[in-house]
Length: 615
Image (tube, rainbow, N blue to C red; front, side, top):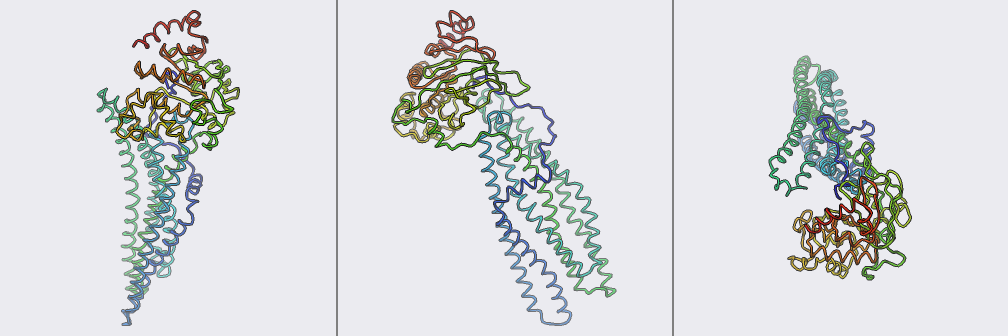
């Protein structure tokens, strides 16, 4: 896409410490339930096993009390020792199985969330994708979904089982001695109330930390996306500092979250230790006064120590819920971005006129070159921005080549974006074959169009995968034919693995001209009814440009070709030329007509076109 149609960058300079989107507690639980609903049976099984394991552990203090009583009464203890050993082994085994079941379920939740989120993000409307940095979107798919693992196993299952275990432990303590239970609860409530005050701080720090991680992904994506430019500009140190600033911000918020989490976690140990001292002192006095037996005090102390784990689970669940809630808010925000309708690719392609390869460039039966019309079209990227198109009107009949020329910023490439429905016109009507493009099924519309962007993106993978990217059913004969037409056959012969040679990240192992030829070949292999070329020969040398110019001219005999042109040689091939300026159509005609009638075109032909042609 050329500079005249680039969407604006997302606004920057927002408050670094301002928290991002938040959901209410009710909505957070609703969204969380939607994520775990498909995995309810497995999670329920894990929770049940955890409760059974906790029951085995809870039985151990009672068995210990019985053991002490039998020792005091000089009764046999072999049986109770066997029971106690069995409880220890059985509880450990069941807890291990429960942990595996829950972790497996959590991984399944993460897998499902990533699959669903990726499916939506790849169907985002282009206008939505323009607003959010790619690195931030990637962070939501990777790091944010990872936090669902903890919230589904710890914040929910461990929280529920921990709460039930705490209740059961307290009941057993009450049965043993209500007085000591009152001492224990008094201490824990006092310290627990102070702990509850730090939970909101954990939530805010965690959310800011996750947003900072997304910012790291954004700046790294920016750096690696312009890797050669950074090196050529000697900007490695500056870009490194930018990444360091983002990592420093993530570190700062991470440390804040860790501080509050540590305070919450340490409060558990503090409450148990203070409770132990209180129970030991008061319990010792009650034993001395013969209010309770020594075995009762020992069992109570064992239960008190056992209480550490479920209470720790509750505190951990609360902190992990705060992390998960922030992640869920970010994931939900991404899922609410506007997407394009999901299509059925095979049926849509067939309806859209994907031609039989045997026709070798001829239009399919019943389909022919597409006609395009713009009727008083207006467009702007956002309400607060100036218009890109202001009443653009022109008609392109089926067949032949139409060139769009004009100074930078005239809105030429935006014409292609509106035809492809990357954006929808703000006003007016864009039609293909007399039918408003908004009334076409999206997949059917795009299946009829071949589009070559100015930067001619090549995807990581093999050369073959790039060629058949838009036409996965293309045969080897189709590929050979298009390689010859685009002068790529000699390149393939030189490559060590031919078509199966990997082209590197963004086609880094290919030259700029080779990437453009691959993009053109990919579009031609689709055999479209409408071919859009956005400065598709700008990086080609004179020999290859001449060859591809002939290829485009040949394609124009069987399809409709629209081209944004900056070279006179391309413009001279056009059957009609649309001159644009400041978002309007200034004139339409042939080269000879426009040179004689339009001063702007005459100036372009005498300066820009000729300079480009001879440069």
